[in-house]
Amino acid sequence: MALSANELITQYKNEFDFCEKEYMKAWKSIIIDVDENASESKKTAARREAQKMAIDNAFVQSMAKFPDIDEEIIWALISLAHKLNLAHLEDFHLNQMQRVEAYARCISAHQSWNKASGHSFERYIAGISKQIMIDNEVQFILKSDAMEMIKKGKMYNHPDDLRLIEEWNDNFDLYAIQTVHGKAHIFGCIQVKTSIRDRVGRDDQFSKNAMEKNFWVAEAVLNGDFFKLPKYYAMVNGGSLTYPENNWHGVYVMAGIDTTGRIYHDESFDIMANHAVAAADCFGVNRAYLTRSWKAE
Image (cartoon, rainbow, N blue to C red; front, top):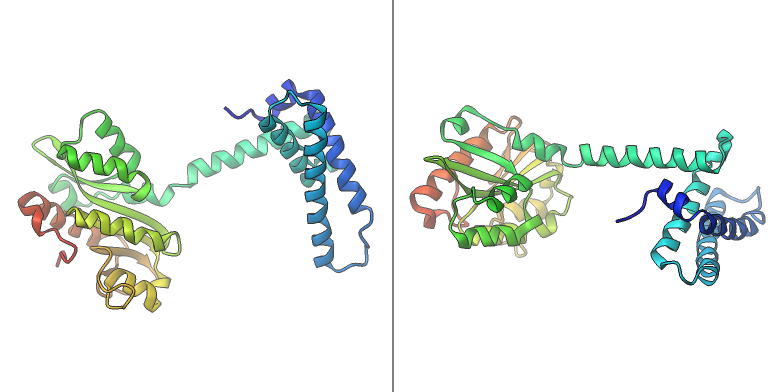
């Protein structure tokens, strides 16, 4: 397990002091020669060169000085020295330990933000619960919740389906499930994007794989401006040499484009909810009809 900044300093104080000294020695030897009248681009280039030289010097000197210390620890110490240098926390008249503490708190706050915000839109889609979904016991659930249900034996798809879903892993963000007589099963796979620029170029293959196994495959998108471009329009609807067929059953977009083909302007995701129920009905009555060409209307 990676050590925190405080733990690094506590356990490797002498090593850190050496790393920081060697880093700053190389840094200052280059920065001191930078012409104050140089252009900003030249100053930036000089700073980058100083950073690389400082890192290289600190690494070589530290590995030679402490041959018994794991290389990963040395890199962590140099990384800390580098970040503290760029943060200029000494401007606040903080001593070394105070700078480390301030840095650690900032990193902790940043990581907390990433954890809280990183899957915000996914949680929003998972929270959709239209009356038609409630009436038909259809839900959208996070991937982590689906995997947990599978692990606990609470998902009642055929074992072949469950093996596939576990193999797909990060291919989908959410799953659509229906509960029949108290038993839940997955009938749909959902990808969620704030913008279709986000990895959409590889998502279409994941989508095709799931459609070939007769799952309903949908994508929920916050902003669909890029669907106005022929490439992305065809990626969903087909009709081009590169994308001759549709690559999703439906893409549901909150803003940025009007309904066109399998791309639906769906500000409140009412259309997506209705299509999910239609797909659940098809999956349950005759799954063989839930082919790539299937369409909810």
